[in-house]
Length: 483
Image (cartoon, rainbow, N blue to C red; front, side, top):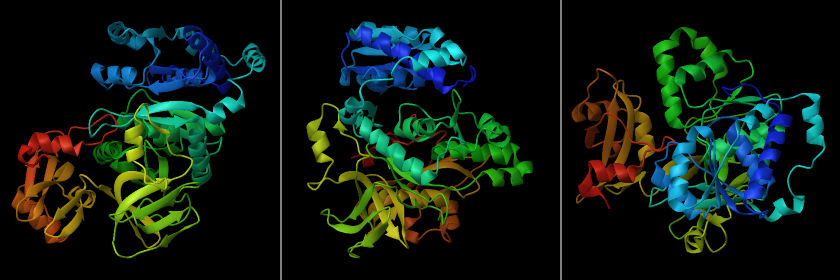
């Protein structure tokens, strides 16, 4: 990270030391919830490992969240302790004072000792056992990750140690992680993507993880093009858009270098499931598709009454029915979460009677690969008897020379059921009208999929993971169409 380099021995030693402090403040109890707020550096890892070594359930928070949302994380999870660094101590102290929860500040010496790699350090590590008995981790919970909360306050998805291990094993096998790899980490560490895919996977095989405090497009390109230790980078669509902008503005003269380091590996997953579908490490990758199920994961595309249309796993897929071109994606397997914390009814509602998790996403299976069409509730637009994918329309509109970012939504319409509306952020100095956009779209979109409404705004509101909350966008910009 920005403070220096670390070895595994030093990180483990610091984590073990801090685990003792956590245990002391929790009177030796286990499976208590411990909320923590740390920067994107080694302190996050020490806090998380310390929670697990002492047998607690880690509840990571994000500094981009407003204080009321952090309060929800702490109170909803019934956290007995809030851990933070000196950087956030003043803010967290106010929160803890308000709700009456203990606060524990990580001492700077923890990070200093993490960098020690001398013989004394290694000998000290060898002299104690790390964590509790293996049997404890077989049956215990590890992590509560809060969903993005597009339908109310975020729910805490509980992940067991076993589920995390299954996710990591599946990804290590599918993506060929080895100790020789190095990943550049710029993602928030309160989300499954940043925690499991980009941090836990490399650490599980002894690889290198280079952590940046926040995303900066120019800095990321410098690491990708110059840092010999980095050969893997994972992010979200918003970040890739910013990287493309930086490339077009400042790196066009290095096109060959950029082309050499970039490859297209699209994948699909969510908080409750971990990674589900992924393009193969080797072999065909089709633009816009998310490949096949990962090892250990079963998927099903279901019809309106949850009847199976397509079922599949890592060994292959079977088309059961061709009555529908697409349907809701269901997931089953050991990588799934245990349930929503303290919400048994909400948990039960998200599963079918035979144990499939309902993702709420519409998918289709075509020529041996799966494609995600979007959230069923906001990304599937029913207009004039047709079902169209907002994501597919957005992909086409982003090719327009004047459009920098866009979001497509469906608005209520008495004649068509729904009409297609585009919300666009334009590139500096550019203009575009609805008639011009519809004319430009003729060769790229079916007439019923072409936007009939265009709203130009300065910025698209996004959450910490770069997602646009389309329900809130409709409420704000098109209140008459809000459900």
